[in-house]
Length: 122
Length: 192
Image (cartoon, rainbow over all chains, first blue to last red; front, top):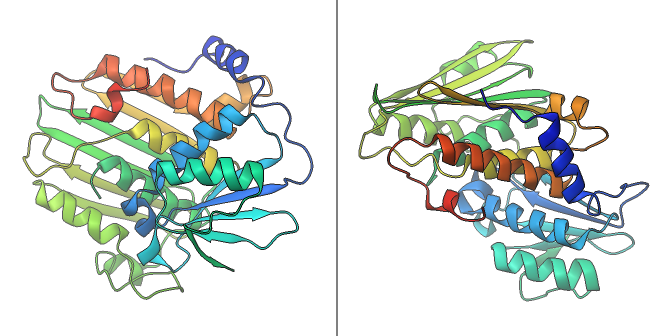
């Protein structure tokens, strides 16, 4: 039966060493992908996949990605909330993989809120 | 839901939201016996009997933001549409197990889809929860357990996006090698 072996893990570790440099202390940015039934049906998994790719590529240790349930705004799913330390949280609506990449590169990395996709400040 | 793997994500999400610390996801494919089964079991608080009886009612939910809960009713409908059905077993205090059965070759059966993406999303999104994934295709079985990953991984954190991605690639690769005759998921072909 194929199982993920320690050797596989070593290879993974070597490949991802840079991206997984210790994530210590308080994160500067928290990105929440909302994954209720509504979010999942609307494409939240593809948004999450794109975000994980961007995260792996960026190799930043001060950003955290989490998922959460439905936030009660099902009609604008997939929703993504970006919280930058010391700034107001921004909820992005109708996200897809490309929008997620744009929000990650512009807002999360450069600090430019992407108002075109923003639903509201909460 | 367009893919059964999205139902799996939804069920696992339910389990975590309910407070589970360990979630087992099982997929059993047997084209030869015209059978496809998906199951999500958790160690959460379980469901009271009253809820259990009315699970497929879309107007029953434990959520407080809205009065509609569609996850299980959608899955039950998807299973029935494909010549199968859904069963839920739950013991208060012990956990809940949701099983959906499908006729593998039924024309209305949704494709399984990208289960690797589902698994990656879960392990990256819920660092505090352990996930066990087992996938059987006829005689072949693929298994993944985040507890083992943590134990054997020499400080490797499965919930790191880069690691979760690498685990998903491994899983996708294993599944492609075990794929039954007709491949049903175009997404699984990319990103090798």
